[in-house]
Amino acid sequence: PETSLFPQTEILTDPVRAARVEASIRKMGQGVRRLMMYGFLNDSDGKELKLLRFLELCYQEGPRVMGQLAHPDVAAVMELEQQVSHEACKYREVLRFQEREGMLGAVIRPHHCVLPLLQNHFCDRLPEEDFVIFDNSHCLALLKRGKKVEYLEFQEPVILPTPEAQEKQYQEMWKAFFRALTIEERRNYALQRSNLPKRYWEYMVEMQD
Image (cartoon, rainbow, N blue to C red; front, side):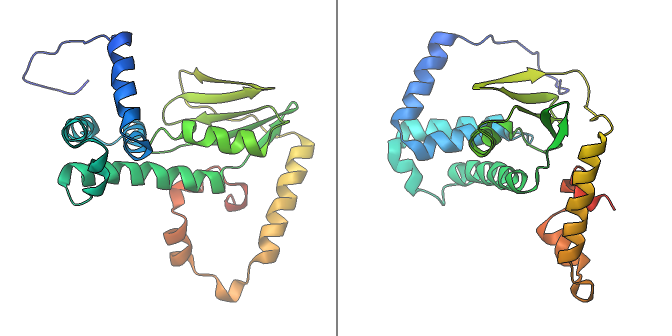
């Protein structure tokens, strides 16, 4: 908990009021709903106050609030949304599965809670596969078994077990393919880190060498 000079009070969620707020947000259109949802998934300090100010403005202006992009309360939440959207997009591109005992597993360490934004993408791409994606930053896992998808909490960061012989072979083949595409004379590490920051490399097989 954050240190504060003011007394703290725990406010329990009221499901009825929460449903009313959600319904009012939906009425203001997909743009407002997306900003609120992505802003909620953002882990930046102070996001709650930014979302509250934006929501107050929404209730004053209605759906036309999305035309007020220069308004500081709108701009602040749009920045939250862009941070989350950018990170989710990166993980759709760089997430690497490994096979363990007939099931696919992957580990990520995102700044923001992007697992819900990865669900549809990988469920659509792997409709016949069972898989699990571990978010080591938030100790949260997305598990797909058959047609069922659920989220699980765990206590500490996950380390995938040592790959079996066939998985090792797949990984070596992927590394060989990656090396074959590389033109050493044109290697530019600064540009590479600019396009794909090193924090994404941790669980990418081809970057382990």
